[in-house]
Image 1: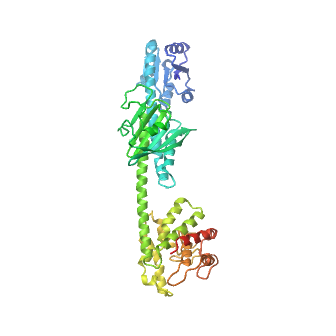
Image 2: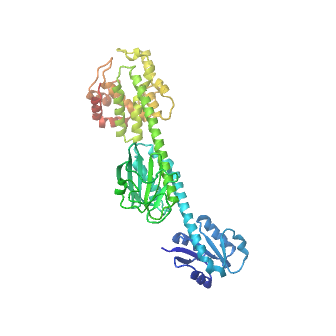
Image 3: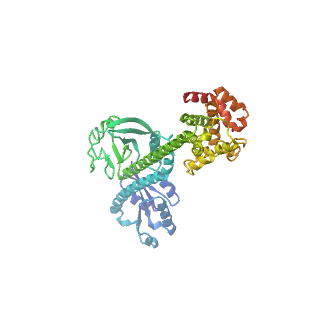
Length: 498
């Protein structure tokens, strides 16, 4: 395909002379000041030739303003020196009488420079795009719903498939995660302007690459051209599993870091160091996200272990068992799911619900285990476990829901609860949900001061009331959700009963 050249002149004789000096490998278009900007985006010229004899001051200013937006090599030709020539400092300036011998060498060099410049700008733009979006990707990836496969696909679509300004894109991308004795390998293929997962295989490390994938500057090869490269092309250049699952390899570029190897194959055009730089930026950012995700997972596991340990410690001070906190967790989770809450809310509530009675660690065990009716003073001490629980958990943003549950799970929707007599939606939703979960389990469970009730009896008390527990104590939406799924509560209790 021929490269385009723009010519700005109003002299027919000069136009014919310049056209006659230019190789047929190029298509020459005459443009005006008015249409040059629009035509640049339509035809993507490699060089602009300007007849300086027709230039006015504003013509030169207009050209410079265009070049500030979209760089283009400019060759100025002149017949006689004119007043604005002093403005031309870095551009090429050619006398008209030398046009035949100089124009083609200058065009070729300009074309080479323009191509390299475009490659640099494309790779910089792609890397800037990736760096600009990596924060949102990391936020999504920290959510357990967002799998690593989806992350790979979304990043490939962002950098390559959806990037209209990037002209050189790999048709196939392999993502290899290094394990002890093998690679977990995923293959993505570009089709219908999106990448789709094609293959997921294990590759034995004994069947490895015949070049250094961990080269400091990455790796690349144009297989059908003679080029100086550290990689000699052969049928066994890649592990056999990749070779067998890739129809052909025309060219490739890639980068490896840590346990990750990223390989783009069958680019539309010849691959260069600029294509490697894009793969390098992708690999580094993926590796960074996976490292952070691993650290977040470890942190979450540590928090979960801590909350579990605190919850179990509280149970040992009461006559309840560890199964009570498990049941309350599951009850709360089902209510939250029925209410249509987000997975993040549901998961956090499932882990937080078990902290509802953590404050009982500070309550006198003799009061907690007293078989008879509590005195007014003893009940006031029991009520303090909500305040103690909030103090134990503290002000960590990560444990905010746990603190809400611990402090407010005895508040009632009609404002008759404790410790602050909160009312309605002033009570955190997490606590409103745990309240009904805890009441149901307390009704079902045998205690030193009461027998355990059947599911039917517990359901009747919650929905109709018995004087101590009344329907108006519960958030109406939470109560309706309980009514819809109360059989699930029965199943959970039977499965996890003491």
